[in-house]
Length: 269
Image (cartoon, rainbow, N blue to C red):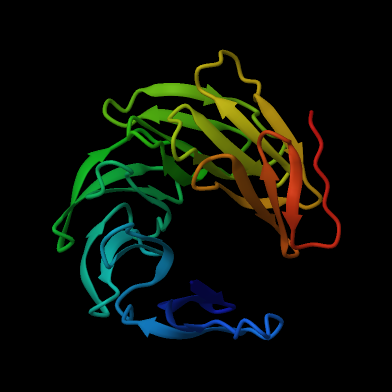
């Protein structure tokens, strides 16, 4: 994870690597030897990391910096491979997302809402391919499963869905929540389905095929929400909020099936 201090962002990243895992003997199931982990500080001294996103198949991390750059970091060789300017020096890169089908492309979103598409050449070079129109008050970005559009949200109640190839608006959800929409995520297998989570203590499910600006489903949580994601087969989703509040919901049942907090609730609206 990346971290920050009172003086500013910490100029390093840490990578947790799984080292060992041993299961207990069958006659003593209550005694487990848990996996051991080691945190290795990656060589990012030349960066000021703000956001990062691991590549799904390569030993590569896309890093967004506080001074407006996107860098590629090889975590096996522990070195920064290359970097390129995303925006102005004082416009930090807040959102990153590797495309799903075209995995040599990565989207970056700056603090002032400028989405940029980058192309990586054999994980050694970065080139800016396209700069999209500004989406004000956004700092989170995610692409759908067939790389046709992306959604952006952030420090407002609105969500922007944009065509990845043309840059044209696909959908604009105005006042989708009653608070800031911290994160939106598309489903893994349905290009038209996405989730949004907000500080207004709600999570909403949207279908781009449905006209209007009303969510298909809605859940209320006990705490303001920070992030959300679908399970690998899209039948559940996990939402986390402040004060270590983590709840997993089953979409069909619309009830929480597990929680890390002592009290959690789910209700439809």
